[in-house]
Picture 1 (cartoon, rainbow, N blue to C red):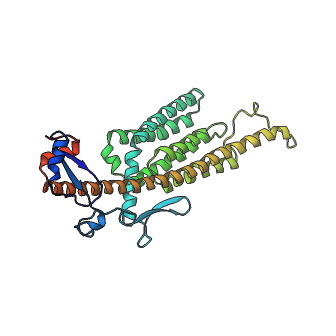
Picture 2: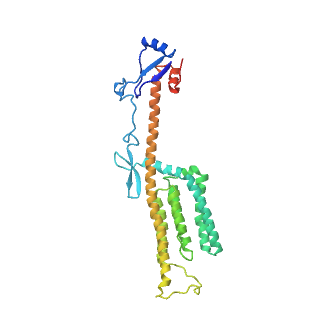
Picture 3: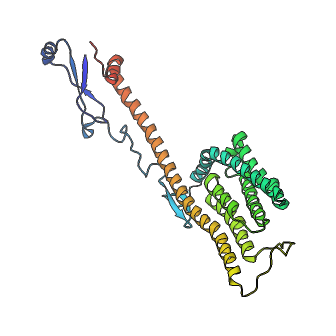
Length: 334
């Protein structure tokens, strides 16, 4: 028997009775009998649509019509369409998913930052800058190492840190580390911005924290203290004043390069921070939208499996299993 499907519909198939013309068809096709299966339209279905008809997952039926909206310009939140309130369950799921997705990159970059800090400490030791060495080796480096170790060898604890008091301590430690980096840059003969800029990129691009936490760490404990130190001028004086004679007040040629360098030192971390804020704002919104679409896709796949099981059960009551398997594999049964 060769079965051919002549139509498509989501309704239950109906089988026409074999009449006298089947014998002539049987002889004409060389002993191969055709079974004609007609699929009626959805309007002519015998099953009421409100009972067994497949349910289409629309925006109103998935995630309680949750959408992503901007909040305080720089932040995005999950908002329920029914009462326009923040969906705390989706926020918690999203925070945990960020810890899971950023775990590998966070671990690797933390160890890379540790290597860079040790190299800077070695250079500072050669130049007898022991205050900088103590800050880098005693504070900055161990925190980078701790972040890498926890995310690599304590994954269960790392993945469950979201929304707990441990996350608050984690944010506080990163704030202290950022302030220590500013202190290490201040301990140089001239205030430098490069290590702070690298740390800002590390916080925004590789840590799984919320954008608000990133802003607190980088702005209040990084950029603002750095700008205050730069504007107030050096607080330490070199003991050997013979190598650094004071220029006269009207010597503009001596003041201009230093002023230009101060402006560059202020502008570079500020511009990088503003750029990172814009990037993290769009990335956070995109990740939230992707999470909603992924949830909708999973629900549609589950509904598809349910409807497929219903149709296979309906077919199994009408045809032998051997015939049904032939339908699926497009084989001939003689």
